[in-house]
Structure formats: C-alpha cells, structure tokens
Amino acid sequence: MNTLQPDASTDGSYVDWPAIFAGTVIAVAIGLLLTTFGAALGLSTITLDGTDQSSTFELILTALWMVLTLIAAYLAGGYIAGRMRRRVETASRDEVTARDGINGLVVWGLGTMLSAFLLANVASFAANTAGTVAAGAGQAAGAVVQAAGTAVGGVASGVANVAGAAIPDAAKDDPTEYLSNQLLRPSEVDPTTADPAELAQQTGSIVANVYRTGEVSDEDREYLASAVAARTDLTPAEASDRVDQIIAEAQSARQQAADAIDTAQAEAQQLTDDAKATAVEAARVARNAGILTAFALAAAALIAGVAAFAGAVHGGRNRDEGRIFFGLRYGG
Image (spheres, rainbow, N blue to C red):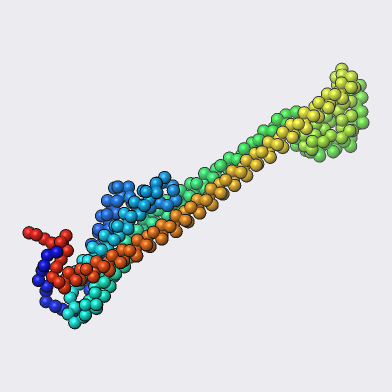
C-alpha cells in the first residue's frame, strides 16, 4: 500500500454512477481477458454431458477457472468503484461501508447484465448450431428408418417376383380368375380334347392361388394331377407326385416370403425404437447437463457478487485512508 493525501471531503449521492461505470468496464475487460486466456489453455467451457470425453479433473479445473475468473474480475471492478466513489463525511463508518459495498454490487449487477447481453448472441448461435445438428440427426434417423422400410418393400417385392415368375400374367393381375376358372373347368382333363392354352391358364390359376393363400383343395389337386397326366407321359401316380412337389415348393416359397417380410419389418421397428431411445437419452443428458451448468454458473455468479461487495468496501476504506492498492500505484 502507498499512503496518499485524501481530497477534500464532499457529500455525494448514495450511488456514484461514474465510479460504477468505471468499475464495470474494468470488470468486464478483466473477465474477457481471463476467459480468452482460459480458452487458450482449453478451459473455455464446461460440458457435463460427457460428449467431449473430458476427465473429471479437467471438468473440475474448468469450473475452478470460471469461478476464479469471475471473482478476480468483479473483485477488481468493485475495488475501482469503491475507491473512485466520492467520500461522504457526514455518514458513519458503517454507512460508508454499506454505500461502498452496494456500489460494488451495482457493478456486479450491471456487469452481469452486460455479459448476459454479449453472450446472448453466442447462445443464439449455439442454439442454431444445436438445432442444425439435431435436424441432421433426425434426418439420419429418418433415412435409416426409410432404408429399413425400403428393405422391407424390396424383400417383399423380390420374393413376390420370384414367386410370380411361374404364374401367368392373367392369374397375377386378376385374383378372381381362379374363382371363375373353378366354375368352368371340367372335373378331369381329357387328353384328346384338352386345349393346351386353356389347360396352362387353368393350372397357372391354381398355382397362383397356392402362392396367395398357401392352401390347395382336393379338387384342385386332382385337376392338376389329371392335367399333368394329360400333357405328359407320366402315370397318374407320377403326375400326382409331381403335383405334390410343385404345391410343396409353392407353399415353401410363400412361407419364406412371409418370414422375410416379418424379419424386415421387425428390423425396421427395432431401428425406429433405437432411434427414439437415442433421441430420448440425448434429451435427458442435455437437460441434466443444462441444469448442472446453470447451478454452477449461478453459484459462481453469487460468489462474484460477494467479491464485488468486498472489493468495493476495501476500495472505499483505501479511499478514506488515502491509500491505493499497490498494483495500481505508479512509481514514476
């Protein structure tokens, strides 16, 4: 400390705005300086959601740096406001202490509002960036689900195409063709009078119905056996065996198609559920991180307010004693 001769006493107002503005400018400048310095050391932000893979020690060090930055900034700003406030001769020591301290608190409040205003643009930019990232994540999740749905349709379409390769177009285009054919076809096929084209259309209609329903009636089975026997040199028993084989293959292909569709739908549903669970978990972590960060900032701000009050009181006493903090003393 250096002893100075105090100026003439004056009875000023309770709130000395020029001194407050001076202290606020000093506090904000020191805060920005220390924040920039902390950023250079990698201590610029606190992330409590674990996305930056920071260790517990790094998080604690970052929190301590933030608290120390606020304390140093508002302690200096409060001291300047108290030291530069005009003296009050008519007030008691306690009254002077209260007035000096309150001026320091005004520095803290004004600096906090100014800092909040300056950080509003940063917060807005961060919110826009987070919204962009969230939108990208949503689009990615939607693309996954859409891809899964496409896979379902692709599998179903592929199986249907394979299954329909042996089915006449007329039978595939009009499912009622099978019912119409049941009404008009003979109970047995006469090999001497059977029309090959009509016979192929009738058998194709029956096979198509097997692919669609997975079932075949005894009448359809007997008709197919007689049609095969009429068009080939197979015996009735061999024709019946061939019909059984074709029906079994059709039923197996249909079941494989159904199983493939069920599997693809289950996978798509699982992807959707996973995407929803990931979004919910991300929202929960972000909410918890926001709450913890808000508490940390509030606690640091309260400590800074106490520092501003104490600094202003100390500056006021140095003013009344004609002293000044050695760091501000000019030795020239």
